[in-house]
Every structure is written in structure tokens, then in C-alpha cells.
Length: 88
Image: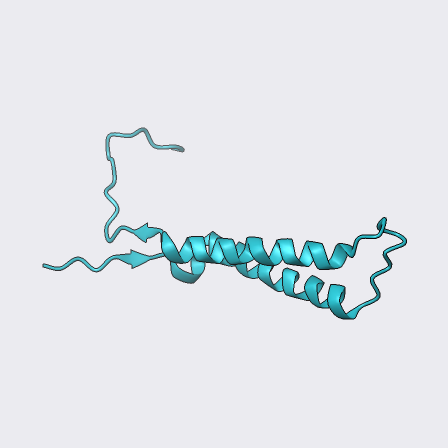
């Protein structure tokens, strides 16, 4: 009997975090490239550009991590009936 390994897929928290960070990174990167840089307020650094690049790289890293090392969900979960139960 061949065992099909099921993964968490889209419900893996790394996919959710990676997607959000990637979206925010793209938005900030776009603002850094096309928006007003206001470098006088940030000490000569385009803060949106650098923050966008860092968020984008981190988000892609999370997505790659989830893709390369997926969480395997077991088919059956065994219950321990000897464990004390909460409540009455």
C-alpha cells in the first residue's frame, strides 16, 4: 500500500506570512522606485526602496522554505486514552 503524503499546503503559516511579506515588499518597492523618496527626512536613504527589498527577499525566503520543506500531515492521529482529561 503506497502512502500518499499530504502537506499543509496553503494553510501552512509560512505560506501566509510569506505571501503577506511579499505583497508588502512589492508595494514598498514600487513606492521607492516611483514615489517621492523624501531623502531629506531619512538621512539620504530611500527607506521605501530598502524596506521593500528586504520585505520582498524575506517573503520569498518564507515561500521557498515552505516549498522545499513542506509540513507533512499524518493520515491518522492516535489518541492516548490514558491521559487525564480536562473538565468533568
